[in-house]
Amino acid sequence: MDSFSLVVLIILGLIAAAIFGYMSRTQVSIGRSIKQYTSELTLARDAHDRRKETELLNLLGYAHLARGDTQQAANHAVMALACARETGDYTGEASALNCLGSAHSVLGEFDLASDNHTLALNIAREHSDQSGETDAHQGLGNLCMWQGNGTQAIEHYEQALKIARDTGNRRDEGKALHSLGAARLALGDVKQAIDCYEQAHAIYGETGDRVNMCRVLVELGRAYLDDGDTQRAIDFFEQARVDARILGDRRSEGMSMESIGSAYQSTGNSSQAVEYYEQALVIHREIGFQRGEGSTLYKLALALDQSNERNLAIDTMRTSLRIEAEPPWRDSARAALQEWGADP
Image (cartoon, rainbow, N blue to C red):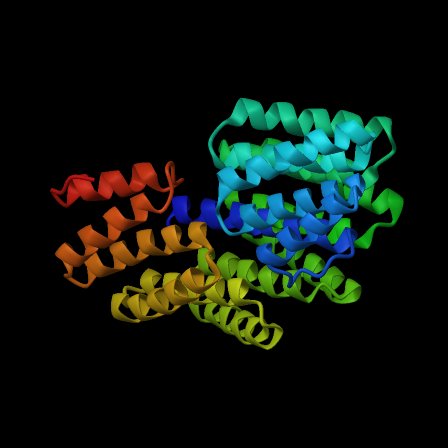
């Protein structure tokens, strides 16, 4: 897997872990849809329940972030932030700032991301909100990953891990280990990455977080793929795919399919890669996961070119650039199109 694809997939996995961690703490079912959250938001507003309104706006922000609708995520986080400040809800304020920071990171607005996560960190510390503090370190670590600074990311993830262990918060401990594994993998330290991922997987199992159990399996597979053990990687991806289907976790199922495609592409089996990418696309589109759709289209285009389908590859690559305004794969996609003698 090329370094660009690996880093993008790693950060998406970390954002997903943060989303499900937040939803677990608020004791809201992760299976609820944006439509359901919106309906509950209307009820909360009708009842003048401002704290519930803040909570639901934050959930909507994270839900939009999960599906790749980053601007909508930012919009909801801004509303949650205003609501939290009006009611003196410091926990809700820190959550909104962390959500907003994550959105700015994805949009490439790194200074704004840093400002929001740092403010969330200060608020969480002032009000002894350990989960908000760990989320802020996670967000700052993810920001460092976007900027290509894996070493500094590790410092933030280790701070998150220390807080989680000091407070006995096993959910946050699992999330921090998950993030450390990702940073280690980005730096090429595969053995350390695998160790962190395995610890995270065990904690997710202990805390009943089956969704993140599934997602860390995908990242274990990526670690083995990066280490050159393609068959073992495929075994992890297949296990994650089966588990995701049992759970009804369509996003993880799509990510597993996409990862299997990457594994076959790494061996030069472009026709098999195309097959899995196309299956992943069906799922990404079905659930409205725009970021996954765009990333898969980017890789599908490369696989199609390897299969001597240059014209189709060009059309597919152009489509990947239209999924969102500033996709992380933009520069790589444009470079590929230029190499193929085509305009973006």
